Length: 326
Image (cartoon, rainbow, N blue to C red; front, side, top):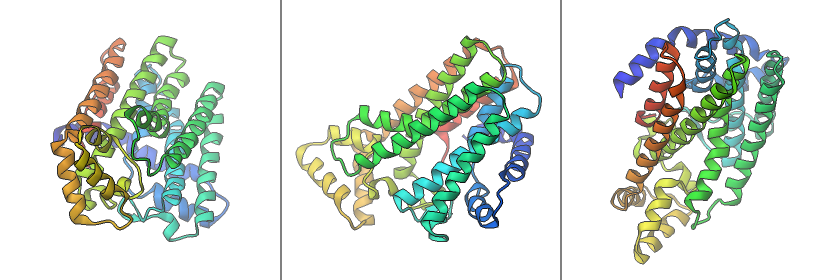
């Protein structure tokens, strides 16, 4: 895992430097307060996965003009906007090891800053002069909003199925990653086969990435996560490790697990016991297997492209998505 991470960092270091500069230069709010709220999250150590995916999806199609750096900021602004909104909705305390924005500023100000970032993303998308990029972004925002609403509606639902879970994470996570990859193909004027291949890569990578994230909620430490473990359970969100374990549990085990999930007071000792059950009932291993399957499908989607530095990077990112610790 360390070797994969080192290879990725070495290859993307110049791109990351340019992306950071572009994010700062193109934020461009009229109000200093908006800049401070947006910067609190934007420049707090994000991985810049989505901009990197757009940049190298464009380059794998032969587009390397420098404009791919500017256009890649679309997807980091979109991502930051959704995180600001999500933290308000979920009443989250921490994000990336820092206090969530709405704990420092009022929720209305944070939500409106999120709206501003969405508008910036659209303004930069318009600079591509590609209506289909704007259409992709419109579809992303619609899907992600509905994904959040769907998850809110199902909050606390103890019998959430795997199919329902997949529908939620497709809308919440996969569509944005898929859109970043597809837009790289669109600005490159790539043919339909290549566009479809990159959309497929992004879709499967997005599902794998979210499944890995859901695993980390039960396997990583607070320091590694930058927030408290067990956040999904505390917020009443059932994810795949828990869904699969519940399906394998006996009546008494399932009853106990439901009690732990429903308890409004978080008990660290019971959470540790629950984590053990996720191991013994196969929820952890099953989620790892499903995530690995999506990684394999993502990498297979790149088969139509000739070997290149960008292809190698996209393959490494797919592998890293399920090996990372944060």
